[in-house]
Amino acid sequence: MLVLGLPSFHHSGWGLVEDGTVIRAVQEERLNRIKHYPYYTDLNEHPMTLGVEYLFRGLSHQLSDCDAATIPMMPMGKNYHSMDMLEVESIDEVIAQKLKPDYNTILTFIKDQGFTGKIIFVNHQLSHAAYVYNLSGYDTADVISYDGAGCGFPPEVVVGFHVDNHRYKKLFSYHVPHSLGHVYSNTTSRIFGNRSDGMEGKVMGLAPYGQPDPSLKMLVHNTQPDMYVATYPSTTKVHYPGINPFASTFGLRQTAIPQREHKKPWDFDDEGDMFYANLAASAQQSIEDAGMHYVKKLRGLTGEDNLCITGGVALNSCLNGLIRRTGVYKSTFAAPACHDGGHGIGAPLYYCGTTVDTHNYTRVDSDFFGYPYTLDDCRQAAVASGVEFQEFESADLLGQDIAESLVDQKIIAVFNKGSEFGPRALGHRSIMVDPRTAEMKDTLNARVKFREAYRPFAPIVLQDHALDYFEFDSSEFMLFVAHATQKAIDEVPAVIHVDGTARMQSVGETNEPFYSALSHFYKLTGVPVLLNTSFNVAGEPIVETPQDAIRCFMGTSIDILYLNNLKIEK
Ligand SMILES: [Fe+2]
Image (cartoon, rainbow, N blue to C red; front, side):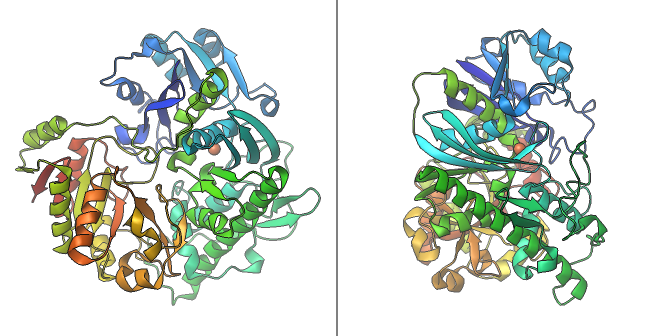
């Protein structure tokens, strides 16, 4: 069974899934080069259609081979929360419904391109859940899904599931305005401006500089019913008839808080800036209190050992780290496209899970679901752009050269095969530097990344050495913030945050060029840790093609680009 995953209108991720296995996935932003597409973009000017050609590029499959296409929401007018999935045989019937948001452009496009399969509507939170459950490799698991506004009426925003062999049982569900995601999006807009969707990670990085303020508490526990209640306006953007936008008469009125002048450099000796740091710390504590409560509640209901964390709030790696640290579950798992981009494979995985008989319970160790650009593709791009290059015969030789360049204090970029699906750069589209001096972080910021100086950079560490440096023995997807050991604080200060933590990624031998680079860096220096950040510049999506990589490299102060097995220097 071949299933096309149509994108949601947040983060716009496409996917192609065959019998429960991900064949390919990509976010439209990587192709049209518009970051956070389509938040602020005219869909008529940039229709969401580039993903279709990309998904099938180089495959024997065609769009006309698809048995179905999924939409990660239910059509309005249906009893949304009582339905998990809705199958419609005819695409014309769906087009006639004129769905909101407007799927007709996409549906008409795929129909014109030869699609003749069914249209499958999948409940938004089930799609989030299926995304993480299928990648986790667990046969049974609890799934906590929490996001901003979800879908439906009223939107579900916190849902606890138990999953047993692809059978999903909903155990609890809470609705807008009691949203953990809105705590973060509202706070982000106060600090970074009204067009700050997707910048929530900046708030998470800011939080350790402040102290939670009880008067800024954004979610408080109610015993009847047992839930965390929002103390802020439900949202500044959307109003849902019948729902009181003010969940309580006390607490924060965030819209009354003036917006920070976000062009101003951060100064933590300034009282005004410390207010916003305290606001960030209050938001973080609010979602940690509520998130932990729901996780413990779920564990209490099921006694399950395995937990999957999903929904956009699962990008909060500090909360994920706290969940893992407290040991409520023996095993925890999260994956990077837990935000709405992941629906491109989440909804097809849900559909396949309910319709395919045999299932493969193997945890993925990477999310390189993009088109696998070959060495030939890279060579052609290099020749066409007129740059000179050197070619290495093996990953090991390439890794050795990368390590030597890093020891030589170069800023390097790496590009390899298929891109990561979601917002984390995990080895195929990365910029790397030597983390052994704190100054390297400032150099990287001043020359390439131009990020706020307070924001942390993340480490990669050889899997076998993870516990020497960090609290957790593994974290393949950079989604669990760990306490750093004293050894890490002493040896790799460029990747340790102000509170002594790090958003670690452990690297095993299948992840090239990271594995060879780390191994050789360890041989040369005795340190199995490097700094890794995404291969892009501020305001742009992560690079997708070899051409994007060369263009980004030439336009910045990156010293060396390793494009597959090619080395390009300025
Ligand atoms: Fe969502």
